[in-house]
Length: 151
Image 1: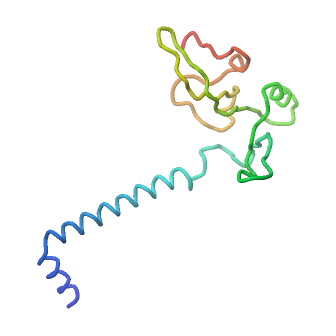
Image 2: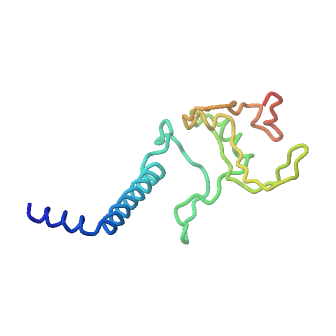
Image 3: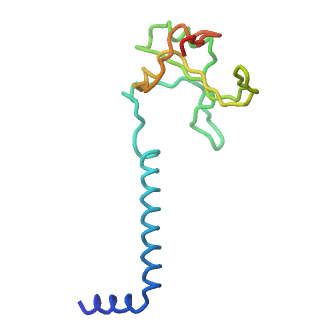
C-alpha cells in the first residue's frame, strides 16, 4: 500500500508528465485494439463460405520458387463448360483472376479498371447472399453476356 501512495504522490507532483503518460498509454492501447480487430477480421476468422471443405480449386500449382504451392493460373474458359457438363461435381462455378481492362461509359472518358470474370452460380456456390442487385444468370455465362437492360 505504501508503494501505491508513493506512486500517486509522484504522479500528482508532475501533472503534465502524468497527463502525457496517460494519453500516450491510451493511444497505444487504442492502436493495439484497432490492429488486433483488423487482423482478426481479415486473417484469423474463416471465410464466410458455406462449406469450404467441399470446394475444389482446379488450376496449375507452382512447384518451385518463392510462390511454391500457390495456384499460378486457372483454366481457360473453353475447359469450364466441359467440366460443368461432366457430371462429376454437384455444382460448378468459375472465377478468372482480375485483369486490367479499359472501361468506358457513354459520355465519359475511358479509364483503366481491374475486372474479374465469374460464371453464374459462383456466389451461390460460396453461400454468399447478394445484398443488392441481381445474381449472375446462365444467360450471363457466355461471351458477350451480362448486359442487363433493367440494371
